[in-house]
Length: 317
View 1: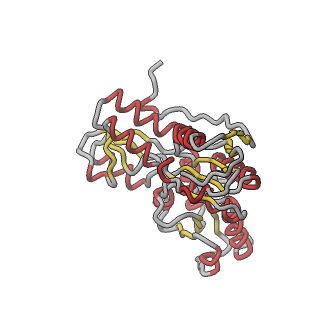
View 2 (view 1 turned 45 degrees about the vertical axis):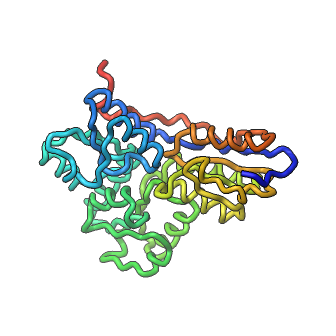
View 3 (view 1 turned 90 degrees about the vertical axis):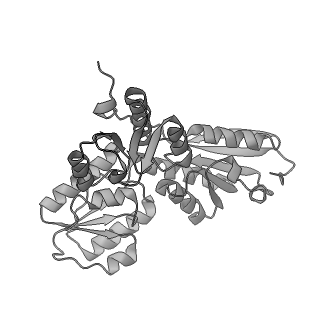
């Protein structure tokens, strides 16, 4: 990793960064289940979207599967933080599986809103990414009444049965600014549009995007630690680039390319909501190994959100 300028390099650390309360809860659920029930513990889909977390849990005895038909009858299975559809829950019950629900409570909130809007006879417009586990789970709450849109052009092409009865929900990990544009387009097309009582984009996604913007204004280049299938991490990179700051998504220090650091005196560093903090520590250490480095943490807010563990892995009082 050569190419460092003569002067002391500065690293600006965004704060908040890294694990959110929902990710922390889901990862702990798998770890406690392994300790309580022993290996293997099956997990439907990736518990969170980070390859390092997955690898560590696999080493401890977690077995990740795509669908429940890969899980033996009667086994313990953890549902990922992204949530599952009612059809998946019904299949687990039919198979006699022992489910541990790792669904983030903020995703559970969106599911409840979907059921409520659909029961009122509304078309539910779900703003989200096609194929993402979270949107698949939410869509499954009311598939006959839900339509998925990803962008403004999807809204332009949208037809609904009754324009006076339209509600919208969003995936929890979207880009705040882009989602606002889609909601504005929906509101312009359907003036009677109803939305959730509080924003669906979660506090952690919003906070990490706000912190990144502060750092990106001062940095010459941004490094975002996160895996390519992590929606909130990908949006952090895109947000920096929209602000004119080159940004790179990396899984860990080994992904950093020397040419990125050429003549860069100020490096911004953050991580998505499913990236462990030790990955950040490794990057700061590596940058320090190239020459003199000063580290400054740029805090925009303090997060205090904490979620209780799923009942199946809660300590007995």
